[in-house]
Amino acid sequence: MWKLKAILKRLEDFYGPPPKQKLRDPFEMMLWEMSAELATDEKRGAAFQALKKRIGSTPKKIAAASPLEMVEVTKLGGMEPARRAKRMQDAAVLAIEEFGGNLRSILKRPLKDAVKALRKFPSVGGPGAEKILLLTRSYPLLALESNGLRVLRRLGYGPPVSSNDGKDYAAGYRAVREALAPQVAAAGFDTLIAAHHLLRRHGKELCKTSRPLCAKCPLARDCPSDTL
Ligand code: SF4
Image 1 (spheres, rainbow, N blue to C red):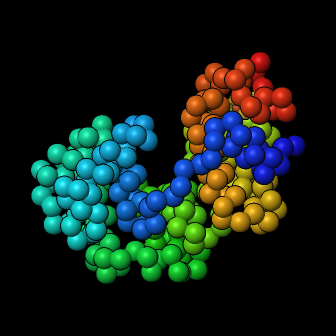
Image 2: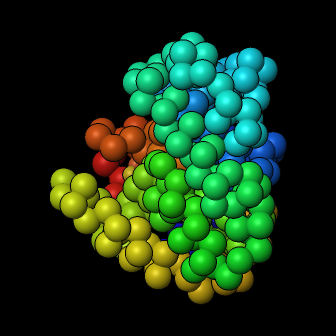
């Protein structure tokens, strides 16, 4: 079976190096996710920058903004702007009331406590909490979103991708992580952060949910799910 490092090497040769991680603050990382819905990274980036410029990106600034101002900005990120604006303001209030307006202290907590604290925030589930802990270089985890998870399952880690995945998402996530645990233990932050970005990109661009573009895939030769 493919080793994680070999997969990443092949993907990096194909797509180029993963993007540099610019955001390091957990609250800003949450705002980034809530800035857009079903949008490209470019659109999300533009919406996030507009939020920073017009309102700010601290819990204090977000909580103090009027709902109308918030929606004016979240509209730039596509669908459901009012719902996303409310979530941002709910997150800001929680950050102030429970964490003194600074979420960085959460990153120093033991892993289980840190995940639990991050999951209190709107839109942050277990994988989202782990992503924050990885990208802030707090814990070296294999933090996968749905695209990366699908790629690894198609490459033979965990259960094969099936039409029941909606129901079994958590079980599939756990199984992939268990299958890769020995390799993850030997990997550092750079490898795991690259894994997050490159697997996500591959899942979005070629190893899509339906009809993956295997004919163009740099992993096709050794992929057990190759649909060529
Ligand atoms: S060969 Fe096809 S199924 Fe396998 S990783 Fe590439 S795109 Fe996905």
